[in-house]
Image 1 (cartoon, rainbow, N blue to C red):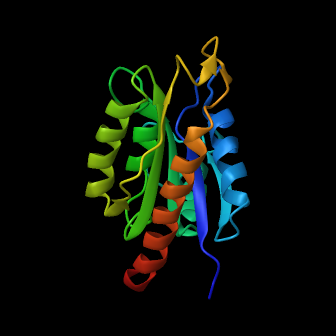
Image 2: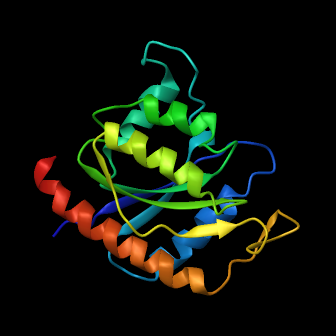
Amino acid sequence: MKTLNIGIILGSTRPGRVSPQVGHWVKGIADKRGDASYEIVDTADYKLPLEGTGQEPGFIAWSEKLSSLDGFVFIVPEYNHSIPAVLKQALDSAHDEWSNKSAGIVSYGSTGGARAAVHLRGILGELKVADVRKHPTLSIFTDFEDFTDFKPAELHTNNVNVMLDETVAWSDALKALR
């Protein structure tokens, strides 16, 4: 059986962002599992323009990266009850590359990023991405010190593992459709 490739997508590019801390924490948990190959995919690395022809280097590299992945884990902060604009741009910059793949969501914010996750689920449905039910939510009040240093409660480790169980299982099952 071919090893599944799961991308942990960092959904923020703002200065001072904490998505890298959260993403690397999820990757640390994931790497201990041995059930897939996990990698951090940072939206900041692709410099996706707001408008373009789709032939710009950032678009091409983004498309190639997404095509190489069997599933995703989105690390998404909540900005104004929604997802960051850069994540929406990244989602809209591809189409077929998302289709018939699975995604988990780890969100954070004042309400655990729950409203951003709900918005993201609707977008993923339109892109034919099957999002899994388990959804770890992290509070900026209890899982971060001074809103910047990520210190997750231990209970979140189990939630991440359950989300990864579902993401890997669905990613494997959806291979037949790709």
